[in-house]
Amino acid sequence: MFKNISIKSFFINKLVLFILFFFLVYPNKLIGMPFGTRELTAILGLILFIVDKSFEVEKNKNIFFTKNFFQIYSMLMLLALISLVTIILNGSIEIEYIRYSIVVSTIIFGSYLLYSLLLKVYPILSFRIIAKYIVLVVLLQIIIALLMFIFPSINTFFLNIQVFNELDNEKIGETLDFRLIGFGTRFFGAGVVNAYALILISFLVSFVKSKKELFFYSISFVLIFIIGMMMSRTTIVGFILSVLVLLFSKTNNKSNRFFFLRYIILIVIILTLIIFLIALLVPKVLEILQVAYNFGFEIFINYFENGSAESESTNRMKEMYVWPESLWTYIWGDGRFYATAGDPFGGYYMGVDIGFIRLIYYFGVFGLLAFYWLQFIAVKMIGKFFFYKHNFFVFVMFLYILILGTKGLADLLYLNLIWCVLWINKEKYSLIEKL
Image (tube, rainbow, N blue to C red):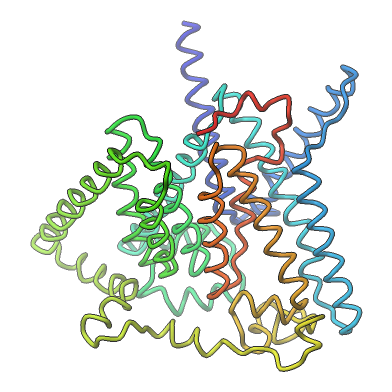
């Protein structure tokens, strides 16, 4: 009897853990909620943090803040200071990166909640465990997005339980007929997470211990890539970097790599047969999917048909490379994020959506460097905690962040802080299995 209770409790904890991972990867605001899921996890995490530290005080223990904690917050304060200077010098009202430290704090306390629950379920944490949860929630997300696209009733249900701003409502309305929309994710942001998951899978291949698990990751890789491209073509970045990891990672298990590639070929063949059956039995579904496929793989279609790897999106992106003309802007920025100061729904300043350039326009090169150094610190923390040889992992993940900056303003801090590395102090190093 007690054994059954223990097993039941274990699975309930894993379910709660999965839900928590989902809403940390895909923060959302649902109808009827006074705030979003990110804020909810932050409040719960903050309460837990205060309770934990209170017990430490009662036991005459020092309240320990890790070096990682101070590194992150010192960079956040630097970003806020640079923002304040550029705001004062330019007479701006846009406080984006002063407010940023508050947003990051919600992520940190949400990750503290996650970290605490992880240690209840798993006595030893590893890259495999955390990466697997992230891959699982991304896999669930793309399945939801696919079902939403095929079945109008499912689409209506998921859209109606979410709260959207005016800009999102407008974009969703414009793209609903040819582009997959997820539950709490859409457009460029969806591609960022999909690509992130593909890169994680490429590293996981090295450390998988069973053929069954390797087969699961092969299925996940194919589905996330194909369906992910129908959500956002940014997914292709993760695919390319994943191939590089599989080819050049020194830690990569050659046997696992061989079986992984073989499984992928097998899965592609099976998917081709399934599509053939769909075409015979329910051709209407195939017609619906063909529209999304044409959107997702437009670059490849154009290349094979016209010999040009271009799309409407890439052409529009080229037009957005509008560099500042003033030395002042390069040094101090213009203190502007949006076309209409302080209005996120009125378009971007100078009509530019390119990440690097938007940051320069906002707070100059110094702010740009501080922002990406903060991103680098978080990536390096993950690498050092979970890998004996972490340089290649850090290189690939940071390269991914830099590549994203050439398309949009991608902040991967919210994903990287999910790994809870800020909260692992020296006394708990033994709870981490390095690979």
